[in-house]
Length: 84
Figure (cartoon, helix red, strand yellow):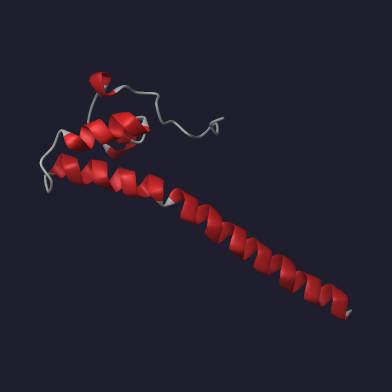
């Protein structure tokens, strides 16, 4: 199940209106890989596709960081509650 804010897959590679970062976010993973493969490494379009791919891969790291910070906050609150 996809989150409501996840727009991946709402645009097909064959119907790509432009090559902006906002449009690349709407490509499915497989279409994004095809987009990147169609360009020579180092070109502007290849770099834009690669940046979007890296952004998607970092999403899990952001969730892990958020969970770590949340657990740290809960532990600190528990220390203060127990100390009272």
